[in-house]
Each structure stands twice: as structure tokens, then as C-alpha cells.
Image (cartoon, rainbow, N blue to C red; front, side):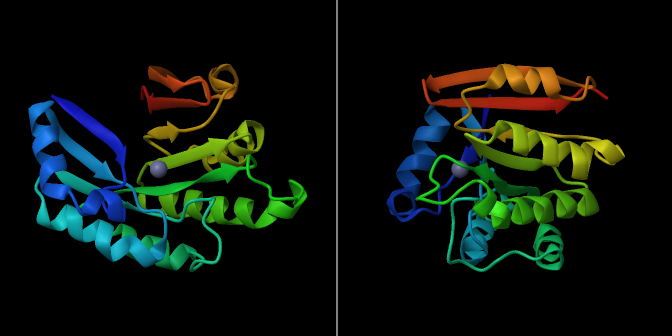
Length: 198
Ligand SMILES: [Zn+2]
């Protein structure tokens, strides 16, 4: 049995072939999948997938690369996170890879959005799905400041994408966390799943 912890089955190119994808999942013994939300606008669609398929679950969150979309408030995330079959907060995080002429300082809005997700995750006690690209230090510093330093998390499951510096993660993380798997898809993308051992 395998679990796909990060997919976007509501994206148009995938949604249009959903029956075939679900059949291929079954063939490959992928028995469960987590559908990751990237905007509040798409949440209903992501959530509907989880409600209509026994083997799909959903998250709620706004991806750091998504601009010009509805900005998530703490209250909205907490409300949506309490829907049945919502099991995580995200996809959240930081992405300094595509600055488009802006400075890192200019990306304060991303850091505020990320903090809002961490605070919501703490409030509802759900794990975070984190995307971080060219922003490892800030991603971890804010997580530790808002989340870990208060020791409110009992469980952390991270998906950390597009991060070349995985060694940094192991060095900085709270010792109660350990690396359980690492999957190199290509030079630019590493998926890391971290679970607390407590
Ligand atoms: Zn994603």
C-alpha cells in the first residue's frame, strides 16, 4: 500500500481524466491520496474530491506563488479546516525563486501569509504542507518562531518541495523530529517528509 501525500487532482488537466487516474492509482497500489489546496477559490472543488471518494482527503491553504487570489485569514483557514476529511493546512510556505524583479524584503506578504497558516495549523492541531524554494532559512526560522518554539505541535508532517539544501533542514530542526524519507525527483526538487517521533 502506498499513499500519495501531495497531488492536485482538481487541476483541469488532471480533473478531466480523473477516472483513468484513479484506476492507475489502484493498479499501482496507491490506495490513498491527499489533494492539496492552493487557493481558497479552489477549496470547494478540492474538498468535493475528498467527500466523493473514500480514498481521497483534502487540505486547505494558499500556495506562496499564488498572487491576485483571495488572501487567507486565520478565521477562514480555521473554519475550512474543520470540514470533514480536511486533514492538513497548506500548501503554504515561501518561494523566493520567482521574485520577478522584487527583493526578498518585498516578499513580506508571503511571510505574513505563511505565519497565518502556521497559526491556523496550531489552532486546529493539523499538520502543515510546506512548499519552500530558495527560502530555506526563512521557512525554518518562521516555523520555529511561530510553531515549534511554543511546542504546541504534537505532530508535524512536512512536504518540502524545490529545496536544494536539505542538509540545512536536518541541522536546524527540533531534535524531536527525524527525517523519515527523502525522494529526489530531479536536481531542483526534493520531497522530504518529516514526522515527529513523540
Ligand atoms: Zn503542490
